Image 1 (cartoon, helix red, strand yellow):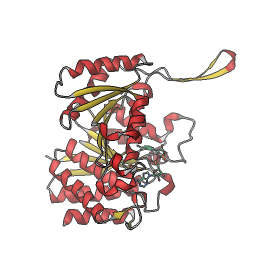
Image 2 (cartoon, helix red, strand yellow):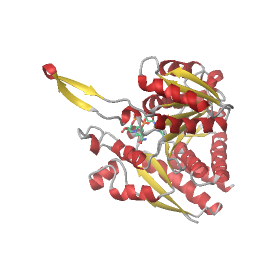
Image 3 (tube, helix red, strand yellow):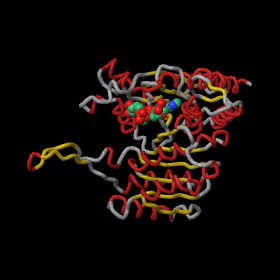
Image 4 (cartoon, protein in one colour):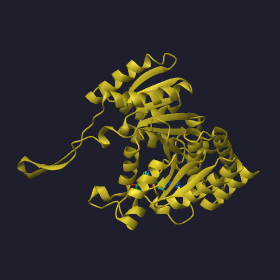
Length: 360
Ligand code: NAD
């Protein structure tokens, strides 16, 4: 039976990198007879320009109807300063995540051996790095109510947000993380701030309760400040990390940087049934947009994750990942991962090389 993939190019470099990922998806669709139907829609700043809102109803309906969603990135200086937060590009993403219940964010940080020198850390500290960060995506302080900026006594402005998780939300993301750890090296580190925040005291308790169902997985706990320190001191100690929305946002970017380029890292956001939205970890990179120099590999690797987690095509996913590795072996590099002796290529040339590797 045919499956629907919704493609959302977004803003900035989004359309450029998604174009390459789409070529890859169309090729493997044909090569492996996957029977995928691709449709495209607007989100983020592009949707604000066309329809006045970052998530038009038609896009949300298409997202609901799709079996999987491939997203580029949203945002840019043109829209990022709108005083009305509802008309900002990221509201488009947050809206899809919350409307579709995409609560489980998987962010791998894998260091390709070919890029060991591109990391800001010494090669011996990062070489062979393979971490999976599982971040809760639809709750916590990014969504908690009440929130806002108010005037308090003395005409003083006060900003406030609410950090809240109930035990079901914690258990749900905990299960995703324990299952992921079980399929990997069976070590799970839960990151919290239980010495200060009650909500994470509960987080820790629920993770402990869950661990009884997963006796084969070794559970440890770490405060978020220490986790940030350990990620840059000795990152290979981690296998799977699980944490809430805000801590995960920050730690996963730090982990991404360990790998040398955020332009190499895919991510998945899943619902309870495995339907998901797939996107590179980076943003819309307005500084290089329209110049055909962005790295499309994170988006191409997001296609591989999509095939594996939502479209039941694990072997095709393996082929795409092997093609990316092959292209790196050929010393082809976009500017973000380029170093002396390597051949600098454009976004489209990198796409061409992956296509050629898949056709070989
Ligand atoms: P960014 O990730 O867009 O860029 C950070 C740096 O990394 C820039 O120097 C950029 O040129 C570089 N970079 C990012 N992706 C690259 C790629 N594929 N190839 C080569 N270089 C790459 O983060 P930012 O500058 O903080 O944000 C820019 C915009 O993106 C903002 O509007 C922000 O809101 C938005 N953003 C969107 C998402 C998303 O759509 N999921 C995530 C983060 C930021």
